[in-house]
Figure 1 (tube, rainbow, N blue to C red):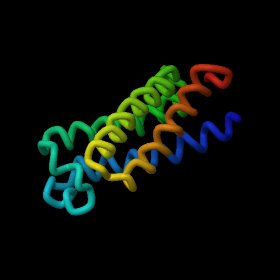
Figure 2 (spheres, rainbow, N blue to C red):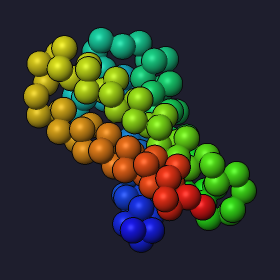
Figure 3 (tube, helix red, strand yellow):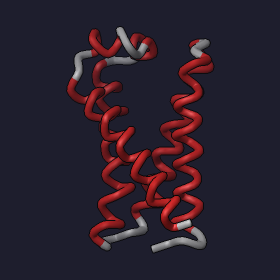
Figure 4 (cartoon, helix red, strand yellow):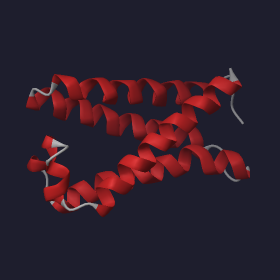
Length: 123
């Protein structure tokens, strides 16, 4: 199970790293062509969401690898789960059914990591 948790954390961290860097480095206009939901948010809010995703990616891996404050891993997973719940709500409100699926998958992965690392497979 520990290996499954590491794989889930790696996949989720990679996805959030890419998503976070994209939101932090791309102008809103460029993002709007691929992410319609960005039309409803200010550039600053989009950057904040990107920063949360980037920090989650770091928090899922770095504390576990270094052994420094490994409790941050499940906390990062919980924080990311909250972000994904928000993403699902936004997509539901906008009627973007196709966009709900990736957010739901990321939510399940984050909850799996939180459960495992807070519970029976803690560091």
